[in-house]
Length: 297
Ligand code: SF4
Image (cartoon, rainbow, N blue to C red; front, side):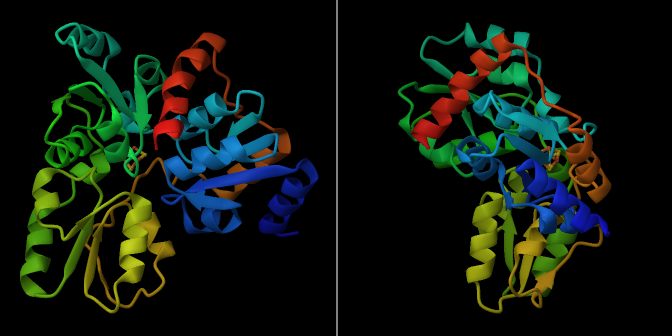
């Protein structure tokens, strides 16, 4: 029996749900029940009837699924897969900063550690951050951990005061700007599309800035344009016409997102290993801002 069938059999037998982020390897996206961005997958994990969930993504995604569905068994297909940005900030620094403001909300990108979530007023994703922040009554917004997404939102929401710290996604931060400029100068009609985790210099060269799902919709709606997409290359799988894409010399790849293999998915299902276990107190504290996200989004 090939590994695809082994996984499908196990999935049926155990009535499990397999969720995969867009940045996962192609074969993992193929075997998943649902493929999507962080917000979509957290919603599916909360709403599904399945009691066993295999998450193919990085650790904070499995944690969010567990927090939203504490009675379900959530397994992370590869326990080593983590997000460097999620752990960049220190919570004491943020709590201290918060004391300097009276009218303040801590708004935390879902790509964050559990500890950061526990001190947050609300969690956001790149697709719902603008909507949610506009609804908050507070004037001052401590936006963590991504300074790039934070500065992008600050440009869009001018009536709030954004306070940013020094977190960033190394994958989006280190895109080679000179190569992007060089491609832009060679192709007059090219549409450059980027994720808001990119820095301002890259964003300023882009015609469209959006979350992963928004990028996919935008690109699939463009008819036969020259396109350069500046986000993790796992999204390419969702593009319907791949004939018009330019690529950078070095692929934009999140190594952690690519750690999950089909063998990992099979073994995780078979042995029900890598269970996401979170202390009750942490679940309680981080559930509140996550639920608030679902209410405000
Ligand atoms: S692409 Fe960036 S933000 Fe997303 S998981 Fe990888 S390191 Fe974290």
